[in-house]
Length: 360
Image 1 (tube, rainbow, N blue to C red):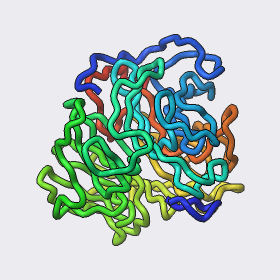
Image 2 (image 1 turned 90 degrees about the vertical axis):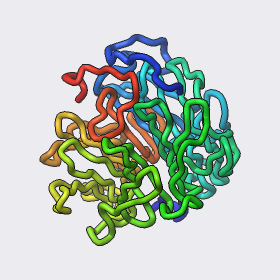
Image 3 (image 1 turned 30 degrees about the vertical axis):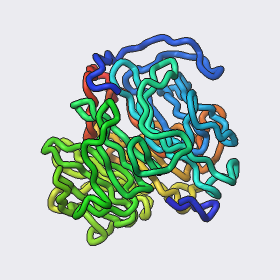
Image 4 (image 1 turned 45 degrees about the vertical axis):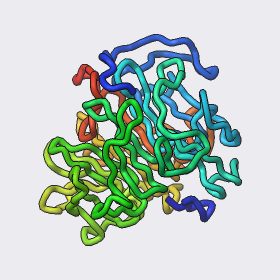
């Protein structure tokens, strides 16, 4: 993703049950705590602030991981650099991708900082799973190069979108490679992939970002193109398959979220650059559908996360429109957002139990 302000940017198998209810935790990083892991709380990968935060609907930070310091390059224990992805697993565990920050991407860290890890942390911030080595870029065993997305499959394995290596890989909880799509795996050639979701049919749905397409790949590496530039797409940052068979796509280069039905008809779209004061090129990076029909959007260079209704009314916003910061209600290039206990259209990790009536 190119930064429109600065001209350059670019666990353990089945882990038991997560009962999505209010859980009190001690304060973290000086924040007053209300409830951790409550259904409807929002997990945000606050990319250039080098942190992941969980916020409630009153905009309180109830949990965080990472320094929150945009100037601190400290990959390793207790830290995450330039996180692009986050999701909650069972037992209150949190999966995140330490993507790193390229040189020139953030004015607070002009020389950039490398991370290259996918990690799982417990509620206290201890790392309980890691794939990739802090500060090491590579394509060999236990090596990644700009991991931008990760999820845990129902079998407990980890599906990782390894963007710098132009591949999607599946690794076991013990870190053993199980599958790879992308060079040099043959027919499954990717160009800067940005996400991968496991579908009910066993195929993998990939947002092949710089090819401006959404593809389905089987375990042999064979793929079909579902949507492409022929459908008007321009730089696809994320894609998910909704329960009704539609596909929700973050069409970043067009600054919009768009939903296609199987006949390639647009049934919903929302542009994130039309409000007064908006960045004209905010390049939204992630959008997921919620159970109540609303859409949760990471509006990257508008520095906000928002929920919009099916009628396009803003129902919730964290972060001020096009304002960089790391104080209360402030973000810097949020890349991903997920609602606790709501896995509508995305891969549900193993062992998670939620009260679906409270996931909103």
